[in-house]
Each structure stands twice: as structure tokens, then as C-alpha cells.
Amino acid sequence: MLSVYCKQLSCLISPESRITQSCCFYVFQLFLASMAFVYFSKAFGGAYMKSSITQIERRFDIPSSLIGFIDGSFEMGNLLVIAFVSYFGAKLHRPRLIGIGCVIMAAGCYLTALPHFFQGPYKYETSVSHSTNKAAGSSMWIYVFLGNMLRGIGETPIMPLGVSYLDDFSREENTPFYLACIHTVGILGPMFGFMLGSFLAKIYVDVGSVDLDTITITHKDSRWVGAWWLGFIVTGTVILMSSIPFWFLPKSLPKQGKEESPSRSTELSTVAEQENFLPEENQEAEEKPVTFKELNSIFSLMVLTYLVVVNGFIGMITFKPKFMEQTFGQSASKAIFLIGILNLPAVALGIITGGFVLKRFKLGVIGAARVSITASIGSFCMLAIQVFIQCDNAEVAGLTVSYQGASHVSYNPQTLLSQCNMGCSCSIKHWDPVCAYNGMTYASPCLAGCQTSTGTGKEMVFHNCTCISEMTAPVSNMSAVLGQCPRKSDCDNKFKIYMALSVLGSFISACGGTPGYIVLLRSIQPDLKSLALGMQTLIVRTLGGIPPPIYFGALIDRTCLKWGTKQCGGRGACRLYDANAFRYRKTSPWLAVYQKHVHFSI
Image 1 (cartoon, rainbow, N blue to C red):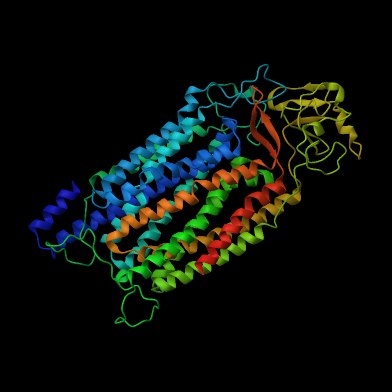
Image 2 (tube, rainbow, N blue to C red):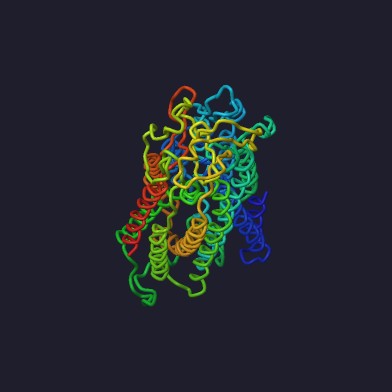
């Protein structure tokens, strides 16, 4: 065991011995590598959960407000044990507590995937293939809720105990760089998580157990459900593997650059910069340090700024794939892929850049605060510009435009009926969209007035659709194919501008992440470090982690134009949103809280 070996060397050989120093150096490097891996694995699992939100919502046929409640269960689980872990964790074996947490996280991932094996095959609502429609909705979303909560419980020890362990035994000037490296490796987790989510979103949920040739929808359809359950098995296994090294790490180590004193433990060693938290970087060393009251004020202000920015960020990132899908007409899998391949690498580059700037220019606490404030203002400007990037609503007859082509937005189901389909006895509850060759989408073949059909599965084509002839410009082809029509070409150009601003904003915001964290870390007294970090996590996740997905989801639900219908007649998941209202409801709250974050930072 590494811990026993190092302790034996420390007792038998003098602290100056190169053998002892070498042993503890390699143990510390193992801890750094283990922390980086566990940050990667927990972020991998968390990002995959975010990327699967849309798939879970469709599979259980639930509204966005409920899916936001499920998403917030991670923070709920975290809150159950954060105070206990943060207070008592520093007195116990911190690496082993982290290992236990990883095992619990893995169990939560496996529990989340469990409903797939208990439910029957997924039956989506349709008017053309299934003779009997089985409702997708099920109370088994409770397993997803409990699994996500269990994952939150297991994640609790990692941040407060891991960071305090690192800061206790590393050189003071190296801590920002170590943190930046760990967070940079950790940010690869969300990138891989979103890429896995994108890949599995294209694979049908019941792959291997159904004949895919009978499926009439594609991954671009709002009723499609990908193989969401498979990703939780993968992420759970990765998290379980990340727990292994922590079972072999020692409870404490000699602090880097200092001799180990036999009469005093380095468990809670003091940090020079924390004892000399100066208001100016170039102040003389003989000036007195700030009082405990001043330190507490700084800590409270940092927690407050974290709270308001997390409040907006969590709500935004939870529904970002759906936002890209509804506003710019992107498929769920493509939206998830772009977030993973563009936004997250920009965040990783921003985090390492912020840590490099601190180390390269040897910035103190005030310098770190200035970098953080500048980054906040810059990212706020990028977000403000994104509000004005928009595309027109998808043209759906009876919902966003009339059957004659006039624009309107309405949630009155009767607008789906027109003279062209009045004699067809169409159900206004079905959502089985077809795309006419005139570029108009109709809610179902019946509502398009289609008389005949040819082909099977995804290749089915509908002919003699009488509603198509009601358009102002007559068309010779009165046929329609399954699926919604693509957006206009100018929407693709607007989407590219949106993504460029989003990526740039992600980079600028991330540049202030490490400096802001250093300011927070240096505002805490050494013996209260684990407790203070735990309390910061408790406050931020209580008020910034749980409410946002719920109220953002409730606001988004109010923009729905066409709800899915369960077999029992209840309301299912939303199939079509008012894109402009969606944009305002989603972006404006984040812009408001981000403005508060900039204000508090200044």
C-alpha cells in the first residue's frame, strides 16, 4: 500500500532523504492524476445526463417542467450529505471517501438505466402504422429521478475534499496551475459525454429488439427516442473505474517544498497568501492582514456571484439542445454533437488560459479578481448579442401559419381543421407530421387531406393531398412525405453566427473560472477550508442548481403549440414550440441573472 510505504519511509529515513521525497512526490502525482480522472468521469456522467434530457422527456412522455425536476434531483442528493461530508470529511480519510463516492455515483448511473429493461417497446403516436398505440408515458421515471439523486450523493466528496487535499499539500504558487490542469482534463468529460449522447441519439431506443424497417420516424423527428439507457451503463462503468486509485492513497502527505515536522501534522497546514490577503498586489509585506470579518465578507460576496451565474447557466445548458432544435431546426443529435465538439473545447481552453495567465504574470488575489470581472463582462456582451439572432417559426399549417399560408401563432386545436380536410374525420390529437412539396408541414397526412399512399416505413409517400392546393401559389405536385420540412436556407447562416458567438462567449467566460475560484479559495481560513467549500456548494446548489431547470422548464412549456397525447388522453411531451417565444423565455432569465453576476463581481 502506498500510504503505509510512505509512512514507513518517513519514520526510518530523515525528511531530507531523496528517497522519501521521491516517494511522496510520486504519490502526490498519482493523486493529481486520480483527481483529473475522477473529474473527467463525473463530468462525463453529468454531461451525458444533460444530453439525454430530450430523450428521457420523450420516452416517458413528460413535460419540460417535470424533466427539469428530474434534472434537479442531482443537486437534491448532493444537499442531503454535503454538510456532513464537508465537516467530518477533513477529519477522516479523504481519498477513500472520494472512492466511496465514485462507487455510489456508478450505482446511480446503473439505476437510471434500469427502467429500459422493465418497460415494453417504445410506441410513438402515429396515424399510419400502429394499429394500437401504447402510451410512452410511465411512472418509471421515478427510477431516473432516484438514480440521478444517488449520483448527486456520490459526487459530494469530490470537490470539497479533493480540492482541500490538493491545496493542503501542494506548493502555494502551484495550486492555481494544478487546479487548471484538473479542470481542463475534467472538461473533456462533458465533451465526450455530449458526443456519446449525440451518437446514441441516432440509435433507436429499442435497437436489437424491434425491426427497424417498420419504424416510420427518423432521428430528426420530435417523437424519436434514442438509446439513452445505453449511455448510463457506459458512464457508470467509467466512474466505477475512476474510484480504484483512491483506495490506495494516503490520508496525508508532506507539503511540497517543506520539511515534514514530526510534532505537527501537515493535514491543515497554513497558506501564506491566505494569512496575508492583501488589498493591493504591490503592498508592503509588513502591512497587517485583513480581519476575519473582512475575509467572511469576501467569501460571502464570491458565493453570491457564483449563485447568480450558476442559476442562469444551469437553466440554459439543460435546455440548450432543445433550444437549438426548436429555434434553428437542428436535430437533437446534431445539437448535442455541436455542443460537445465546439462549446466544451472552448471552455477547456478558457480554463487553462485563465490558470496560465495567473501563473505567467504571477497575479495575486486582486489580479485574479480583475481577470474574473473582465471575463464576466465580456461573456455578458456575447450573450446579449445572441438574443437578436433568430429564425422564423417552422411553417406548420394550422399552428404557425394558416392553410392559406398567412402567418399566425395559435394553440387553438381547432385551427388544425380547414375546409380541405373537414370531410376526412381527422383527429386533431395526432402528431404525425408530413412535408409537402410546397415546403409546408402538416400535423398529419389526414390533416393534409391526403387520399392515398405508397411505400412502407420511412419511405411512405402520400398523394392527392387536397390541402396543398389551398396555398396561394398553385402547385402541380400534391404529394407529401413523412417528417417535418427543413428550415429555410438563411436559417443555417444565422445558426452559424449563433454558434460562433456561443463558442466565443464560452471561452471568455471560462477564462474567469480559475481566477474566480482562486479568489474564493484564498478567502477561506485554512482550518475551515473543507467546511467553507462544502457550504459554498450547499448554497449554490440549493438556490442555483435545483430551481432553474424547473422554472426554465415551466417557462418553456408555456411556449408549446402542439402537445403530444397519451393513450389515456392525458397530455404528453411537447412536439412543437413557438420558436420566438421559446427564445425569449429561455434567454431572458439567463441574461437577467448574468447581469446581476456582473454587478456583484464589480
